[in-house]
Length: 238
Image (cartoon, rainbow, N blue to C red):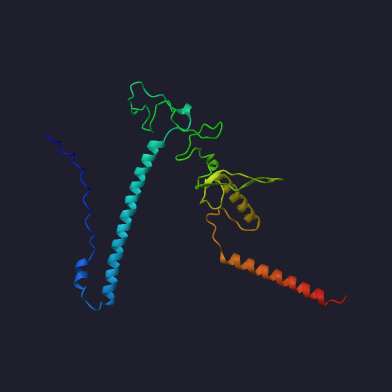
């Protein structure tokens, strides 16, 4: 007796076509040669509102998908970066631990020997996903495109300025790590206070028209006085 072939998994049913709001009214006016302004605006308003609802629904669906992927990422790579911090699993493998002796974090034995370490010498930190370096040494990876070094000048030397070079995201503007960004912000606030501007925070700093006008007037007057002095010096007989 011939064996029956295994049943193929049922293919997902195709999604039903989307129905446009007010399509019955649009079909009634489909053969019309002219439409009034109000009819056109109402149709556009209905479709724009429906499109906004679809975009909103799609956005929240993507957010749920992102949460699921984040949980999966943490489940796979959420290991402690140091071996000495790893807790010994119970002998019977129970009490919330998985079959690998870990609290659902990744695969491998419970001693943490499968954890990929940073390739920099004497660095015990765990390597980031898809690379061989930890976050502190990620700039050592010549193929990475996500990080750049902090451009704060720590010290000026004869060979050139010594930069901080702490890893920050490439999209960070200005190119400063959080520590040096706060330091530069405090220095800027102090300089503005010395110039006569009482500023408590740069985040709430808004340009005021009377300050800008006063500065422009001061510069124009200074330039005119300089021109007047130069012209008087030329007229005076030697």
